[in-house]
Image (cartoon, rainbow, N blue to C red; front, side):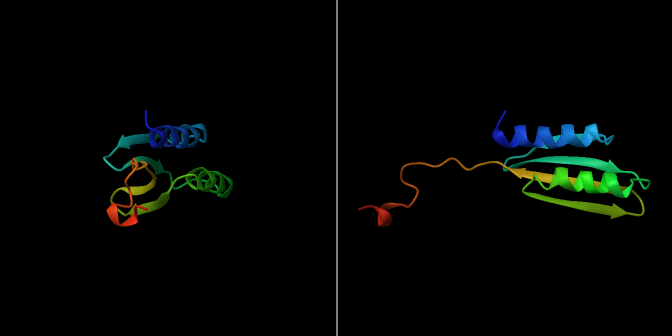
Length: 92
């Protein structure tokens, strides 16, 4: 599993530990984690949830009247580097 997957799995596990049902999905450039947020989430649990998603590269909350509230977090996959990253103009 790539490092992004390991980080996302840790985020998902921590969200599950506070009682949220988290799901992960692999994409080409990132790994995402989503969890439904109940209306009755206490202020203390909100702080804990925010501490968890702060480990991600990006996170947010999607709230709609039809689907409720979905917390999302994204961990970017690293781009492999090569010996010629700068191209010929940067060679000495």
